[in-house]
Image (cartoon, rainbow, N blue to C red):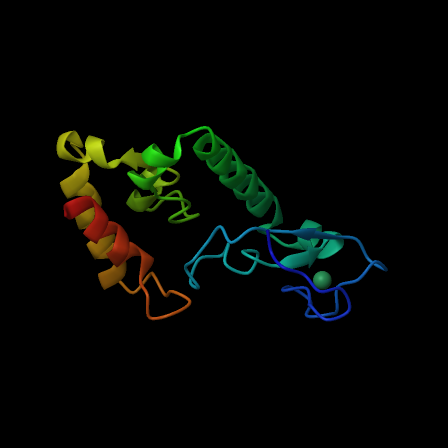
Length: 152
Ligand SMILES: [Zn+2]
């Protein structure tokens, strides 16, 4: 969950300080793409009324729920299995994007050899990057990382 310092951290929608005077909601880091409409919510605290008035507020709550379900599933795995596991997380909130069918997919490294959609996934990801639709927080590109994980 986002790390919030009351009276210091600000709401990522209205930029005003977060404290007990106005109820707010916290979001985990569930979107690493600056160009995705979900990015403004990711790893942030947001006033409840700002969230309710935002056109993507409902969607953000839905993806937060899916993110927690996804994390919840992983918690039941053994450490040994987790190390061999590739959780994709939320790749795009735009369900018109082909990439969206891979949202929240979790692959075991042992599944990779028989994963029939691997080539399709790699092509879709490469196209997504080429079209300039992904901008990470840092130089580290999560999509490149996923390609290297699934093709090694
Ligand atoms: Zn606000």
